[in-house]
Length: 294
Image (cartoon, one colour):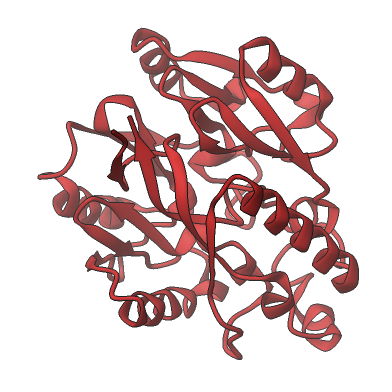
């Protein structure tokens, strides 16, 4: 019988938390005021973004996933479209993040309100000067938690997180990130790895620390390599909805073929306005709340 767990990024998703783009991109005035300041690559087309998002929701519903939505809020930005970053899921409860990106500081409080309303246990909260963003945290096989040390997640936040999860994990791995395009860029741990199954992950090796990449290989993880020309189009940002079954943005044919060759099942959606312009793929768009493992 399947067991419910929160400590996996590849188990079958049962419930997922979203922020609908119509509520994150509230109106044209907000989009005009914010997109450049938030370092979007281009101004989003709200109407097309809604069409893309509704198609994504239909895709997720087709897997039998229960969708839950954060409400529209006046004190959040376009970036609230990406709720993965605001909280972490553990078997002890949710951990609220403190955002490394200053424009996003208000987002976790809305998660906290949602968890209170839905009677979802909250284990703790990362507090300033510590920062942890959910895109910098990934569950690996054997109950291992990998956490990036970069511009969005800092040593003080990592220390707090390690203390909170120490009774719950078998190992805690810190992964130093490169400078790459600097502090204004959207660069997380999950910019270079997306777990697809316990023994399979999509990776962008040119930006991976050698010890972390070697750890994956030593623990039997097969690596699907994203080519350079598909990195900026979110080729490395892939959401596992069940072991070996994944959702990805259209437009990365080499990566998708390599996933198929590795035995994965790939489902794609259009994401020009909800993914590519804001530099956030399907993992960023979703905060899985409940998964099943055999």
